[in-house]
Length: 166
Image 1 (cartoon, one colour):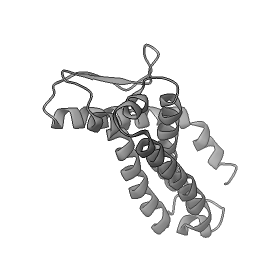
Image 2 (cartoon, helix red, strand yellow):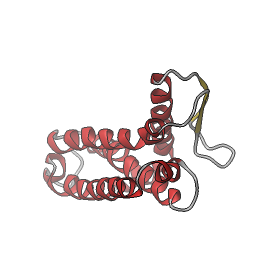
Image 3 (cartoon, one colour):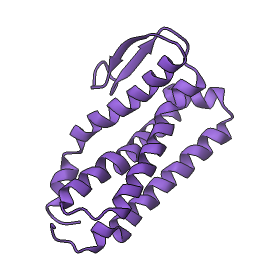
């Protein structure tokens, strides 16, 4: 990474709001799709949470798992784009990596780690789904996210074109 790239990395907390929006929107979309009314939608830090969604029905396995399926789909899409497209503006490529690759990694890791200690989304999934499936999913996807980041920074068209801004 270039020295200039670290400015984008330091801006990560701002990107996390977009990641939280993606996370909470995933819950809300699946709850709405299941026929529940969305009562409250918050995607900024408040009351000890990064964000939350309240709907008028139960939390199902689908509503609980939605953000992590969305993380995987988001990662796969951005991985393909970041690997194949040679960006003329390195800062644009780096922003795509932060939003599409790093944010899903952070979201999944943070919630998986938290679910091992308290009843967040992952903690409730561990109670409702065979724990081996939940652990397996997170170990597999977190490993994929780490390998994907290494590949993007070493083998993508933009990374190989040189370390200078283009």
